[in-house]
Image (cartoon, rainbow, N blue to C red; front, side, top):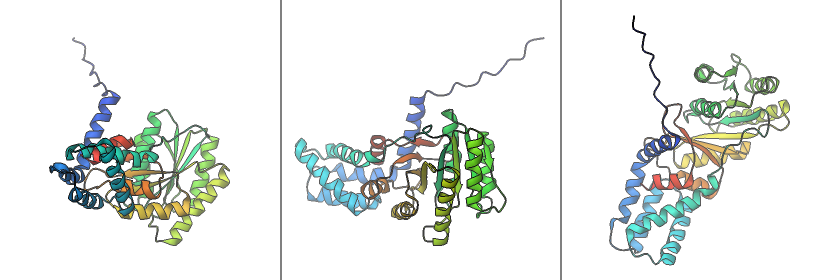
Length: 316
C-alpha cells in the first residue's frame, strides 16, 4: 500500500516581504488622501497658488491647522535651500518634512524591564480596542512573551466573550468575572500575573467616551488599583484610536492623556476612508509614541509605526 503523502506546510513569507505587503495595504488604505495631495504637484510652477492648494489638501487630510502651518513653513525652507524649481520634486521634500514631524512618534514598545509588564489599554467604543488587544497579544506571543489578559471591560455586553475568543485564538490565559468590578478584575489579573511569572498583563478597560466623566473616573480608579497590586505599574497606558475619526481622534488623545498620562497609541482602521493626517496633528500637539498601526481585521494586520514609511504612504 502506498504511503499517504504528508502535506508540506507553505513556508511563511520572509519578514521583508511581509512588511512590503503590509505597506502596500497601508498605501491603498490612504490612497484617497495621497491622490488629493499628489494632484497639487502636477502643475508647472512653484508659486503661492501651489502652497494654497497644498494647505487645503493637508487640512482636508485632517492634519490640523498647527501641523499644516508647520509643514508649509518647513517645506518652503527646504524648497529655498535646495533651489528646487520642479513642482514634482516638492512632493519628495514634503515627504521629508512630514517624516521629520512624525519622527518623535516612532518608538518601540519595550517588554521585560518589569515582570510582568502591565499594559492598560483604553479607547472609546468602536475604536477597535478589544480587537487591537487580540492582535497585540499575537504580536507579543510571536516575540516569545507569555501574556495574561484581564477582561476589565465589564460594562459592555459581550466584551468578555469577545476577549475570550481572542484569548482562545492566541492560546493565552484570561482573568474575568461576570459583572465584576473593572478595578477588582484588574487587581486580580496583576496579582495573578506576578504569581504565575507572566511577562505581560494586558488590561482591557471599558470602552468609553471622554465626555462620560463618571466612566473616566472609573479608568482613573483602575489605574490606582493596578498600582496597589504592583507599585511600579501600570508600565504602559495605551489608547486605541480609530484612524477614520480625524480631529475627533486628537480630542480623544487630549482627554485620555489628561486623565491617564498616556505612554503610547495604537491607530486602527487605516484601511478605508482614513485620512491619516491626524498623526501629524498629534505629533504637533501631543507627541505620544505610536507603537502600532493597523490596516485590517486579521491578527497580523498590526505593525510597528515607521515615520518615513507612513509619510511616503500618506503622500502616495
